Amino acid sequence: MSPAEHAALTRLGWNDTLAASIRDAPPQAVPVRVIEQHRSEYRVCGASGERAARTQPLLHRHMSQQGDGIAVGDWALYVDDGRWLVQRLPRASLLERAREDGRRQRLVANVNTALLVMGLDGDYKPERLARYQQMTEASGVKVVIALTKADRVADADAQRNEIQQQAGAATPVLLMDPRAATTQALLAPYLQPGLTLALLGSSGVGKSTLMNTLLGTEVQRTGETQATDDLGRHTTTARSLRMLPGGACLIDTPGMREIKLVEEQVADDFADVRALTDACRFSDCQHQNEPGCAVIAAVGSERLAAYRDSLKPRAGKFRRGKAAGGV
Ligand SMILES: Nc1nc2c(ncn2[C@@H]2O[C@H](COP(=O)(O)OP(=O)(O)OP(=O)(O)O)[C@@H](O)[C@H]2O)c(=O)[nH]1
Ligand SMILES: [Mg+2]
Ligand SMILES: [Zn+2]
Image 1: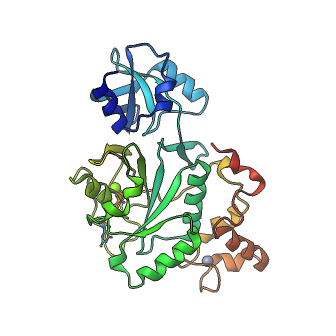
Image 2 (image 1 turned 90 degrees about the horizontal axis):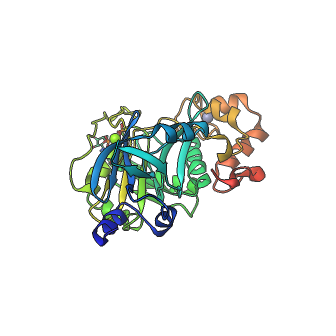
Image 3 (image 1 turned 60 degrees about the vertical axis):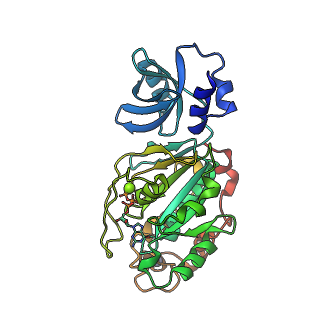
């Protein structure tokens, strides 16, 4: 590999561990990073630029047998003859969630930090934040919380404090306007050259707006949401990785309404309680004494106290050591 090619790969997050993993690869197979997925087609980027690629049938079969597949952020070996991905390289991390049908959905691979973007205009839900934290911690990915739409609420600082309380002191909770250039400095620690940051969160919270700001160009389409529409609409429909001018990689993802954990991420002792919370009248219900609380109505006070406890930082997480084994 020439120095120029090596520099190009390094900008994509290439490192010595990956280099060691391909020592025995044939010369016509070159490393690429998967930057987009469209059904069975991928967009990949390597030392000599971007290409379309597909997984070689043999690799595809091998991965399916293990319930695995290629995710955006993955590194793979690519051969130009046939435009095949012939091998997936070892992952440093993988974020995945359970789909409704119980199968796993791979979200992003090889990210160092997950930026959980939440809108202060009604998007924050303690249960959802807890699940995001469980999902990211179980995969060894650092989570940072970005709170947007502060300009639309009167009590942004109070909300930030409350969310910081729940998230725990080890998790940074940042108030930011994704439209403002100041986000660059706020996120600098997670955007050092060679690092990959993924944007996760509900639809309409400002993920693509943030990506455009950090890129300095309007690459991603963004959606105007009404002030009252806290569900937003799905403007982004596919995950995509972009290189930032400063040398880091950023992955934008479509909004996710819910995170369902895959089995080993956590032993969920409160699945029944969580299911009830959707029926609470207020989206930010704390299940203490709010009117219309579906949880208080159905769950005994002792169990309710234990549940609220489980939402606090660290307390009750990874019980039975089941999740600690990782993915
Ligand atoms: N007032 C205000 N508007 C914001 C803020 N952040 C983002 N927006 C606006 O919110 C709208 C939705 O932003 P997007 O970036 O498209 O949201 P998204 O998270 O990418 O949404 P999906 O692609 O559907 O997942 C855009 O019109 C943004 O300009 C903010 O802090 N304050
Ligand atoms: Mg978007
Ligand atoms: Zn409630």
